[in-house]
Every structure is written in structure tokens, then in C-alpha cells.
Image (cartoon, rainbow, N blue to C red; front, top):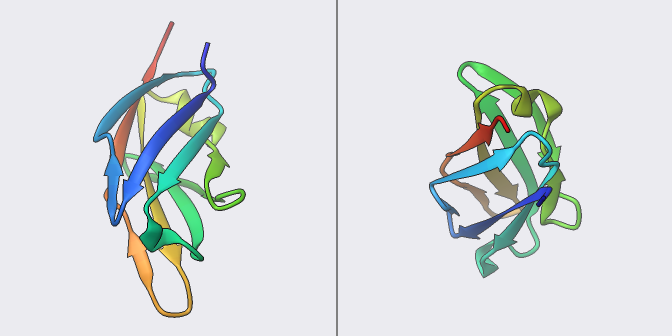
Length: 100
């Protein structure tokens, strides 16, 4: 069973637009385009009106999914990056949590 989700970030586009995971999924690994080099990156998680604690990306590419996000049927994720000159924010994607 895979315990990691891999997502691609090209500019401000996070993809794929929707993805599935199971309740045992622990981490997300992001693959960033060059625009994101030397940025501090944080992943945001939400479900409906509930926002979960933002997660700083370890080594600029990986974070743990908040356990509360996995308790529902879905959650949303996006990434924000910032350096001294620029700020980037991706679109949100929906991650469906399978109940197996």
C-alpha cells in the first residue's frame, strides 16, 4: 500500500486536478518547476470551511498530511511559496479519501 501522494507543480498549476488516497496515506511529495527554486514553501489543507494547520515542506518538497484532513471523505490542498521578491500560490486540488 502506498503511503505517499506525488503531485506536480508547474508555475502556479498544481496537478492532477483530483486524486484519491486512503486513510493510511501519510505524506505528499511535490515536484516543482524551476520558478519555485529558492522559495520557502508551505502546503495548505482544508475541507469545507475548516482549515487545517499549514505544513512547511521538508527539504522544500515533502510534508505530512494533517491527520484531521484524512478523517473526512475529501480534503483540498494547495501550495504557497515566497522568497524576497516573489510569492506564488497554486490552485487547490481535491483529494478524495477512500474508505477501504
